Amino acid sequence: QVQLVESGGGLVQPGGSLSLSCAASGFTFSTYYMSWYRQAPGKRRELVAAITSGGDSTRYADNAKGRFTISRDNAKNTVYLQMNSLKPEDTAVYYCNAENLQAYSANYGAEYWGQGTQVTVSS
Image (tube, rainbow, N blue to C red; front, top):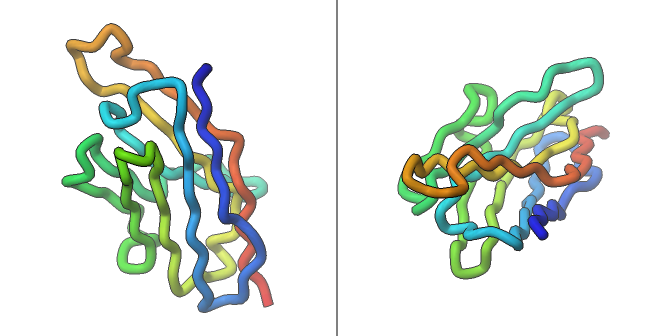
């Protein structure tokens, strides 16, 4: 069965840091495009960061660029999000997303979501 399990969320003061992890299983992790999304109360879910299957290219939301870093370790089937200089507006549930973008794959278009981990930035 496919599983994406996020961890590392918690309460942190403004200016602090958190490291999120997403452990994947049940699919070929190294062939999937991985992303972190977040959703705050009353807000739409938004893309925070994304990374290609080989880890050679990344993309960030404007309000995350320079503060957040996405990375992956395909040998460990894990994607990470290092968050520094956190702000109260970063408070949200953070979700891990996997998507198969290989057009030749039998699993093309497959998309999976984790359950989310709460990040609260408050003094």
